[in-house]
Length: 364
Image (tube, rainbow, N blue to C red; front, side):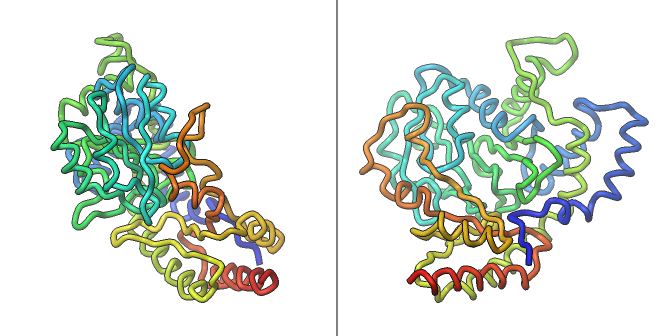
């Protein structure tokens, strides 16, 4: 049996026919940049998550960078963020000229909110939590800390489309939330894309200018901006796929239950902990035998991926005290993400689990 880590052909096949129809209309209009399609998707996304404004941009990475620029983050400022995430969380901080102050992670692999306050200095301007693997960070607690210290929150929600905190969706509690539409995300497109959500009209307007060379209209340049726009092609695809997001989340949730039931007794594996309201984006088990297990699964036709073989404080020549990031270092290189996506079958999941059980039976 073959179980790819993700099967985009299968996932996207359910929207291709409608997309092709919309594509014909797009070619008839020749309306490719900052079009009606982009505005329509921005409105759809706002309605879905329950925010007032959203700004489509080129990628989730650009979303973070432009958010920091919109808040005036510059050289000498400090941004508090997690020690464990993809490099794209850190790069925009450094590109903005700021210094990253890292905080260790909690059991959900998110920034440990209880450790944030002691990292605040006079130079701190932003707290940048990450909703890793679809588990929302502790935004309510971080919101209280930020408000108390007059700081802003830029949420890296790249992996958290549709996730909830109580009765609110991710992207509605922070000052600015940044989502990615990279093809493998639970709401992924057919190229790069991202969006920023906010309830602040002034920030939304500034972001619309920042993404388009510093102005709203052609040949209008109020300040130095960037070229970072969500194009019509991606917006059309995403607007169709958005209507399936809740189904995707429920399907993934059901598959997670099967994984949990079948792997619970494997003592050499720690299964992931999901918060109520997670979107169940990734199923990442922890094991000291991650590389060997990945190789065995590959030989049996099963795709996996390692998120992440590093912690952020060790990237780009940074030095750090290991004692400050014990939890992040404990999972570094030990997490192995298993196949999890809509339309993966229960039979495929059970095959993955049986193969894992076989591996550990032979390697006791």
